[in-house]
Image (cartoon, rainbow, N blue to C red; front, side, top):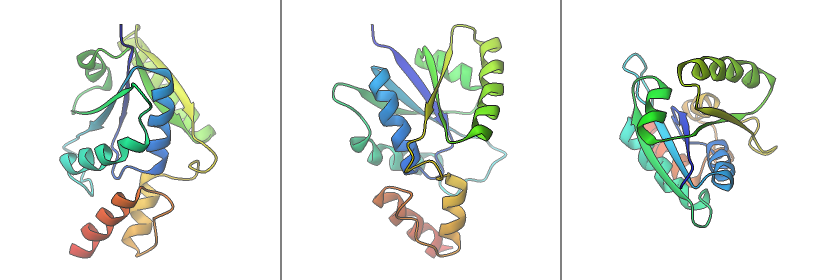
Length: 165
C-alpha cells in the first residue's frame, strides 16, 4: 500500500527550499501531494494554476526514482485535503526555531482535528535555510536577482510577471 504525504503551502512562488523539502519527502513516502492553498482573502503574485505549473516544472529535480509527486488545490482546512488525498502524513519544512514553534502549534491543532494524521518535520538543508517565498517576492519586486533562491524557470516567470506590472 502506497504511503501518501501532503505538503501544503502557498508556493507563491515555489523556491529551492520547497524543492528541497519535496526531495526529502520523496525519500520517506511513496507519493507526495503538493497541495496549493487557494484562499479568497489573499492576493497572490501568481494565480493557483500558474503556481501549479511552476511546481510541476520543478518536480523532475525533486522526485526520486519510483516516487509519485502530484499537485492539488485546496481552499478549506488542510486536514480535509489530507483526507481527500488519502494522506497519512503532513510534511512541513523547518528553517529555524520560529518555524518550529509555529509548526508545533499547527501540528497540535491538526492532530485534534484528524488524530490519525501525523505531521513530519523536515529540516531545510543549510543552503536553503534562509529562503522564504515572501523574501523572494520582495527581492524580485525591487529588481534584485533571485536566481540563487528559485529554479531557473521560476526566476524567469517572476521577471515576466513583474515587468508586466
